[in-house]
Image 1: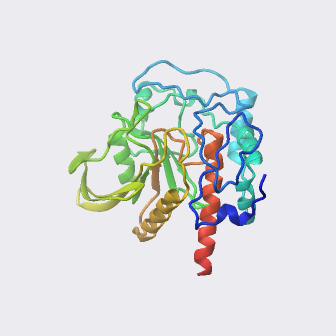
Image 2 (image 1 turned 45 degrees about the vertical axis):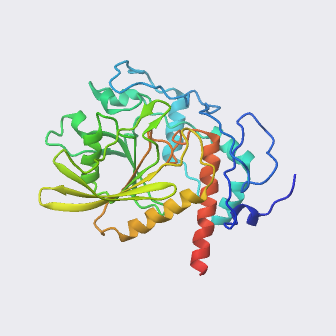
Image 3 (image 1 turned 30 degrees about the vertical axis):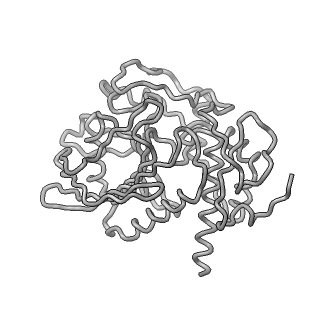
Length: 340
């Protein structure tokens, strides 16, 4: 194979393509991580795990219980301990090297335990209507709790969403949530208002493989849960659209921006990283311009996987490699900007 240097990977002048490797292949495709062509690979089960990554395509409103009353196995308990305690901090140099090492990334992906939340933690009547999939549930220790007039009514306080730390360890910098269903649109807007969210990042199409994400925003104006949502401006870019909303509740009025990234193929990785990096930079600029009182950025797709990096939330090895690839390119961009 032709020997490639680190600069070949992180050179931003060419349009780099995503490194993607067939799950069953042990040898590297000819070329380097910056120029490989994406090979579409569907959802795969993570090796070494007793929890399948194949999602249960349960429609909203299904009532079949899943494992209620079951005890955590030693393996699942170990996974929980790992995910609560494990950290892996990479220096920039380590990140660039790691992004080029497909074999280590593949091994690391399959060795990471699944983030399995025992459904018995959420054994409440009617809760199935609040979850898109009965096997994808929020971590109990960091879930978003909606304020309610009746705090004893669990359903009124529940939304399938978790707070996530920021890059520098900032608490509650982001919220990862499932793509809203027809049953949870009102809950999403309650969360947006409660958390003082300035930005929503949407990484999905409205329909993927016969699964739908509810179009939770209006063409013009709509009211959900006492919150009046009005579209002020719509801008279409090559890989995403931007909607600017005015939210009004009582006498208070706020601005919300929604970035809808439409170039992420269902259950696969994008062909190229730069469009996603451009979106990241635009979102960061918008965050800096937001009011100091603003809260977390909300990130969602059709299911809670693509945008966050908890065990099991990245579904395939290709996505895991893509995350490292994008982070490597992003760090390089930040370094170049700092030097300038």
